[in-house]
Amino acid sequence: MAGFNALAEQVRDPERDPSQRRQALRKCLERFAPYGHRATWHHLCARAGISPDDRSPDPERLMAALEELEEAREVWLAYERDFARRRREQKHLGVRQPPGDAWHRRCWGGRGLLPVEDPGAAPPAPLAEVLRRLVREAEAREARRAAQAMHSAERALRTRRPGAVAHGGGAGRMAVSG
Picture 1 (cartoon, helix red, strand yellow):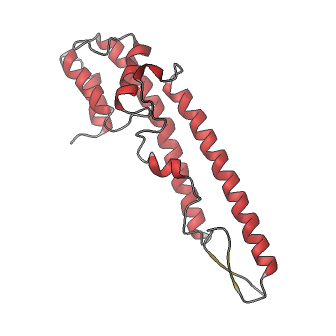
Picture 2 (tube, rainbow, N blue to C red):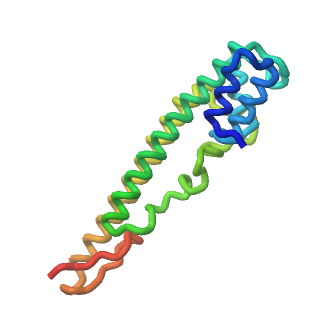
Picture 3 (tube, rainbow, N blue to C red):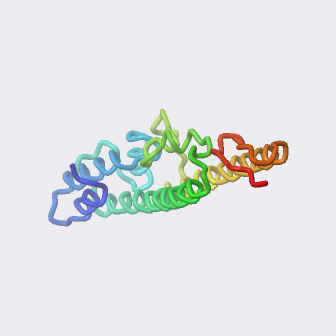
């Protein structure tokens, strides 16, 4: 099974028939489809000027669709790298449970980040722009939860006797020094 980058190379390959290049782009959506497969496909087609049912679209339009998808994927991969870095730091500090953001757990890998049931109802803005907004919102939620967890942990530390172990807001175990 080819990965996203190998499929993107197939879309770029001028030696391939346009229908094969189209199919490779559709397969890219099996790896990364922020709105879900159908809605993301319809969004890319609308933005690139391709009919979703066109079996042999203009290669230049396919490239435009691919470039939009790749830019959005890069936004998502940067968020994933940053999230992984923050989790390593949290684990180093003893926080074993990630802050409770169910959205991040549901959309791991970049599928269904912003599920759209009706393919024609996807936001008209470029995918990367929409994802940047989603990432900012997710990071703001995470920052609020982290601040709340720290506040709860500090409050628990102040109310416990020296030598006790505090369990603050799902933030893991923290030894209280006396």
